[in-house]
Length: 193
Image (cartoon, rainbow, N blue to C red; front, side):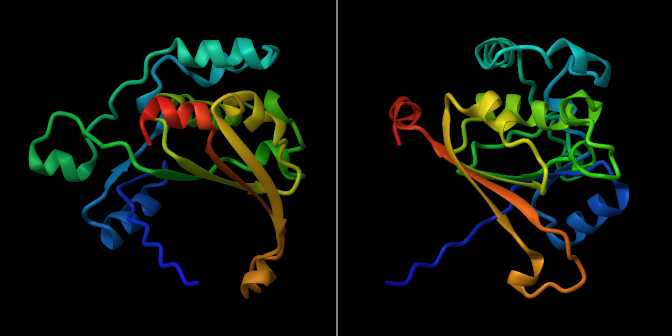
């Protein structure tokens, strides 16, 4: 049994100008944004202390009760004269969140590191957009229970570690942690999928 899956990238987000430029050259039809926080107003880096002690139920209620804005115009939509990007709900999403909070270089600050808010802002967006599947990548040492706290009521998940050499990469040597998430049956029924 063979199966062919084609993934089309409709949007990307990267703060580094060089990365955005490369993405725009390779995928000129996609929307490329500068900052995930454009979709999650009010989530400044200083608010990291306002959620770290919350239980999973409290955290999910806070994320569900916060508005998610349409992303500001990307460079492609700006050229087309569109006021805001009107992205349709994709069937999936792939993210690599900042690794410094979990790495030796980042001194293992974990959830107390303000860069974790990038993942929290993404989870807030996911809870509102409700893609059918997600793939999250980070370094060995990432606390996967954070994904459970953020999205465990909506998504089932499975985490595994992979070495770059398993895929033939010899330049990158550190193992990566991947978590696949897929919608729970109740959410799928409410979406009509």
